[in-house]
Image 1: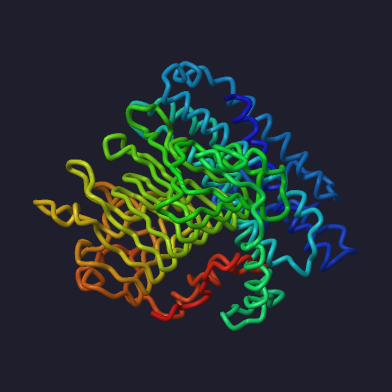
Image 2: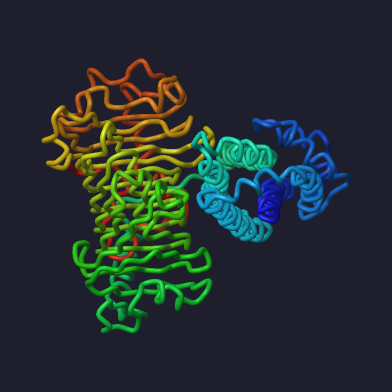
Length: 552
């Protein structure tokens, strides 16, 4: 564990370094002859740290760079400064080692290790990209960095989420201390990138036209991708033995590392009880089933009784970029008694989920981080059943609330944006929000809400959707008895319909509730502007996609 925390610190150092490298490169582009540019002056370091919330940490880390001309030297200087800080913190790891004697804490610490490994992989790839980027594509790179840095912040927060219950408070306090500098550096870097992106937009005027369904790019992409979708699969999985593999994980293991093109895995009808992980080094994996009620991935892991951290409860976990899944059911059958029990967890960039049925109870879908797109899916659950800090758009989906455990209310969303500069947010567009008959027939009636602020800057937008009458008239619920997140969240509703869409009794006293939001303001949360702004990655295959407001 100590080594992994150490690696986490390195990761955050590289975050700062890559932002510095981007700023230095831009400065050199504008003034190659300057000898006192951003890389060499204390004033420039202070200027770079100005938009950050932890200025002292930023300046302390970067001010050690003296007479630097090569951006790579910033990595070395920042690395050495943070290494010293982490070595000091690691002297106090004994309480964590003692706490790891029980199964749950062991699993939560294992999750932390995996999360830091993911951060390291992201950071290494991004540093390489920054050092060789094309200035003409700088806005695309900034968009990538925003998404990536938001994911790094989410990874760190997820580690701490494993210790939220009171019986693990001592372990959590120790982890907070160990990760303090790491978290501050990561949040600072995200602030720098946001400031840098605003500067690029203002000084260069770089913009990108929003693609519409009639654009030739979309038509050409659809023609090309349909051919790929109809091509012979690279692997076939059949539980009955009629394919190359009997388990899905075996087929995933056969995907070449760093696979550059779609690797299509056809999963024949059947029920596959597995805990499947698609690692980050397995990009462009495509799962195609024979129907969401015929091809079913199932699991039953839960936090309570089973001793798993939420991160490890999923039936399917995905980290590989460019993942696509269609025509498949994913479920967690743990039930309300096991509390948090994830069916599908996605922490992969540019992931697409189409015509899938995602079933569970509490924490069904963990849309953890990066850019994600869901189309024509059915998602069921009880408490916080769509949660995480991904930048995720849901189009034409059915969100069905199930009957919860005793004394539980139901929340559809629990979006987890922890800082205002994070790229994360949920957009629910032209979806059907309904309740299962077992829910509506319960006496006395059970309360249900559109969502609640899991984290301080929670962001959820519901637009052009049908909301049934079972939703409480207030619409949104507080996280607890305090005002946590009520005035810092971003919750908006726009052009919804149905008996539950009436806005007259909504939580208008919350400053975070966007009462009367305008069409211009809501437009930036359409898929084409929210998640598909860089070199477009949607549509994929023959999967439907609407870039702007939908025809309803």
